[in-house]
Image (tube, rainbow, N blue to C red):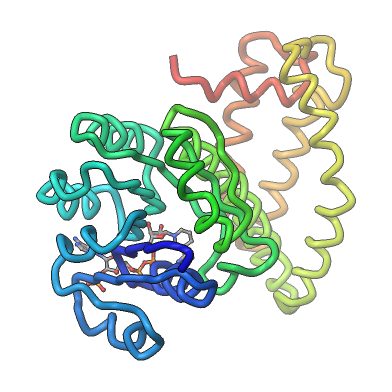
Length: 288
Ligand code: NDP
């Protein structure tokens, strides 16, 4: 056999993880707070553990897929002794500092700890395109890697246990703001009866065309050489955003998602930075 893996948590994601490991030849033991969720897994050949302790004892590798940081600590702290000497992979979504706190706790208890972040929905687990990020103990990554590779591309980010969560949250920050922009566009266009599906096509095409600009912004941000602007400056971009906000309001649509960006550009203008490139607004994000 390929080895034994215990999966703690059989929600939508934990179930997908457990199923994939089982299907790829791992002996799996599953535990879930609500025990009934283990039944379909047992039907398919997994072992069910009655207690979390039993689950941990059954696996060389323990993968935790609970809800959040609080549920991780609530459930794992009482079984720290049982986890000693095991490889614990926690793919529960947490903030970077929560991941670091769990890593520090694990180190205190002799637990080999790897933190993870899943860049996929449950249906993508084990499918092309699924990408999982890991950080923390490199030895743990080495040990767990063959099992983790069955779930999706396994990428090791570094020894700082917060790195996987950090990249996860950064990518999600960009995603939600992009989709927020899409919803803003839909809200505007539906005021004249355009169905969301049509606007989805328009936005998809527009974003695809404009996306390469990001690679041009990157060296600008890295160098900090914003002024004079190689691209659109603050003086140009402020009225451009003002027009979008005005057009939204004319149609009875709030520009709530966009207005904070305009406010930050207003701050740049108020401090005499009209000729700086508008992407210098990134410097306004640093909390001092
Ligand atoms: P679900 O809500 O489907 O499942 C949550 C799981 O956590 C259940 O097994 C639940 O047990 C368990 N749980 C919650 N609170 C506790 C607790 N206090 N003690 C013990 N067990 C607890 O969530 P998902 O499976 O979708 O998500 C799991 C993790 O994966 C989350 O951190 C999520 O952010 C992450 N993730 C999910 C993605 C997705 O698309 N679904 C994508 C990427 C990451 P019970 O059955 O008893 O309620």
